[in-house]
Length: 155
Length: 154
Image (cartoon, rainbow over all chains, first blue to last red; front, side, top):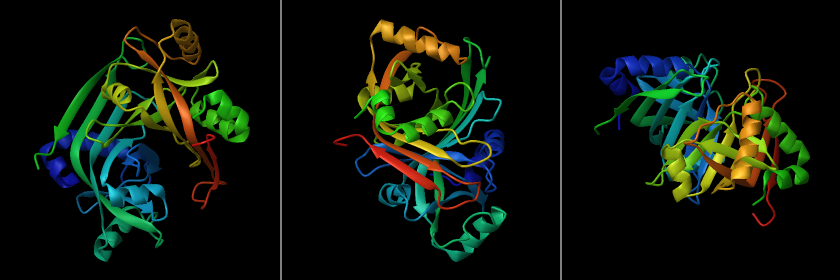
């Protein structure tokens, strides 16, 4: 697993595109898939926040996805595709609950004070295992094809 | 589990709100979450298609298609609107639909919304176990109005 900063150091061009698509300043929407108690998948929108070189999300502590992440930290996160379509950014790894108040304050500040102001918002860091950036060539036609850039943490 | 038309008859307001969110950009758009071979989650965008009484997807050869063949459990979420955070979420089970007449009827609906089809795609119907529609008065409003539905026996 790697932090965002470690991923960025290894693949700065992919990280730049990823940050553009995720908009991780607390105003971009991404979709977070988690593992339900019965092993099936769940998916809901979140607002990622990049702070201290790490990727985070706040999750309402009474929500099923909060329970999922505490039970089985495996996640998959996909950026909301741009309005023009034809581009994707996808990350998988494990989520860890963060209790440290100093980190929480950093993340709240990085969100412009939009997120994490309530006690019911639990903070998770998203450790990164794999990253996938896709550009769909010939987007919007029957002859479109994906051009992938991938990265995987060695740890 | 229920086909879309059964869900729609049983919970017309939730189904109507869901249909609007799926088709808010003209072509149907949503995220499809599946179960990887190792049990972890996978998520990618896809084009849900409401046609001939069912909810369908035409999936090209890709990991998410292999996931559904191995484990039919899936979750679908409509894309978020630009001005408000309304949500439509479905817990589903995928079933390959080999009937060529059904495939052509679904493909025709898909093409009518601007979609393109090709011969590599496999048609899946998604049977619905649970549905959730969350509507907000405005962005930042909390909590939303949640409307939930579960298939009989689900």
